[in-house]
Image (cartoon, rainbow, N blue to C red; front, side, top):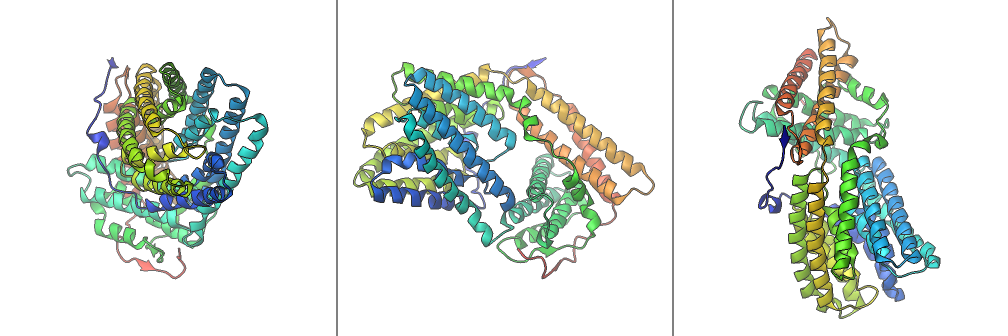
Length: 548
């Protein structure tokens, strides 16, 4: 039995959410990363080179939710990926002026960037910034001899962006882990409010499970390195996990109190408990990690969508006589999400944001044309606005991204604003229509297979936990490791099911099996908590050795 289509939301796609807790950090970081290179080029009278420094500077957008040791690695990889994409694009542009060939190269690069970003889970803004830079560079005039110098500019700006991204760690070295832990505590408090049976408990449980898993991923991302602060945070996440497994016994007010205490740079609360609680964490750190390349297989349909959709969007733009087909290509690349329904929502957001953005550009461009300094300052303002607003909804951030992208084209030379606006509107509509149409046609029947694999993983983890529970005196390490493994597989099952539920043209999903697996899995989780003995929900203390 096949499921043909799913409802496509419209108003919901434009609904504004709450701003991120750290909305100002990526906004300030990108301004700090972009401003010095641009101002230096302005002083030298070489704003025509700003596109290459922007390639490196925009890397400062990445990694803000990662602990600083992991952020250092992520930023370095993003910078290398950005520079590599720029080098390939500039080389291709120097070797041929055939627009069809360049669009094809851009589409293939967009697919590679999409798959690598998803496989490595690099996080927002994902592949979009990489594709924007590489696609625009494909149509930048230049020679082979200029490529090394332009790439060097991007690498130098990327090094500065790395320093900007790492600088907050000097003042708050455990900030990302503290935020992730606080989010897990607040989410489990919301689930505890339902006592596990009240209205909306299933949605609250899924949100809490995802938040707890994200907190563990944040804490474990630093590897085997440990200190008293991180150990204290791990104990708090264990408390969140316990509340998730036994919501009726949890104290929501106390969970929220711990979360509030993690704000700022104050000492981390210490909860009563033994280090036996963290044996499962130690076991997980010691276990071999699944390499990122193992995730490439399931992403093949998404890669095909991206390559074909971007290529067709670029070809359609060329057929319409638009001088910048990479705008249509980038629009298509920005749409592709985990499933067709989410892709539709992103398409609606992209179109609305871009159309409003060109109106903002029309209002601002007279000011930007007054002086090159005004142009640089306008771009910086839009950089800040884009990152400050995009967390509330993608379309709101696009209102600033669109004029910023249009102003960047003015760095080399002043252009006709009316033509820029017309071409951007046409390319937006073409990219969105062709991109979404390709997502509908290129099916992803592997989505259902992902649920089957996740169900199998949950069942194995549940059976292992049940075997440990059946022992007369289970070893604390084995019991805690089994609980951690089961909690992780349940979170993965819910994420996989949510992603597959928005996909079209696939067989009916095993929703009943998923519900039963989640119910039995959470019952087993609760049993492991009870077997571990009573957990104290009060009597916290603050210790001098748990500093931020």
